[in-house]
Image (tube, rainbow over the protein chains, first blue to last red):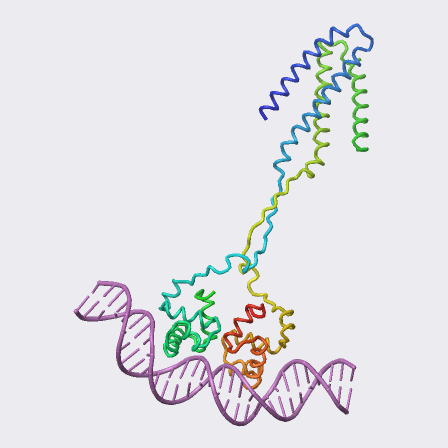
Length: 156
Length: 156
DNA sequence: GAGCGAGTCATTCTTTTGGGTGATTTTATG
DNA sequence: CATAAAATCACCCAAAAGAATGACTCGCTC
């Protein structure tokens, strides 16, 4: 607003000077008063319009509408795999690393025999791991264990 | 713009009349010319400002800056439950409504006996539904069927 | 009314899973 | 080193799950 006041004052001063000048310049001319008034009117009208435009231009920038657009990003489309199990939950339940590993393979749909083959251990070992993991998860069946595991953030 | 021209003309006419009036009214007063000029200047400046504001007001809306802020939202974070199975996949695989229903309960960690009780049918019926669903899904075990079902968008 | 798909149920048999118990071997950890 | 936790394996038994087959009922359509 300081700049506006300055410009306004400047132009005002110039007009005052112009008024003084025209006063003696066209004093002898017929209808000088009407011409003078019309001149002043046109000048100030122009000034006013310019000022009015000027004053409102600043607000245009402020008038910005922020539209927050929520974009759904498919779960598979980003961070495809990087899953890390909830270690806290794991410790709380006392689930060992091996048990969680077996649990993940169970969730993958493998049979005890297949899991045993993948981990190079006997099927009996897998059974014990399962039994302990199921017990800690409070699950009676492997499908239930998988369900609980996902709920608890232990499985992807 | 027609309305503007009308208002402008009207006010212009009024001012001309005011000019004529003041011309004879304050003609004898000292410095009447300066007062007269100042009056006209102030009036027309005001009119100009008003007009300027008026003229640009319409454009402000047009010049409104719309900032679209796109926010990434994880798909799982919203609409937690409203899950609807992929009917297309279901039809492609030829999985019936009942089979899908049983499948969902299998995924929920229930035994065949429990599912039978929930659906008021015999355990053998559930076994049949499972067998057919597993066959259509190419699964040998229920855990595998659940896994496939989730991959295909049949299960939440 | 014949045919068909979906749902229902049963029977028999095999495989898998789960519970329980016990034992041995690694692997940390104080 | 002693000790505890974790991992490994074995054996037995019961329950659950799965495979294969056949049959019955509906509701619909040609």
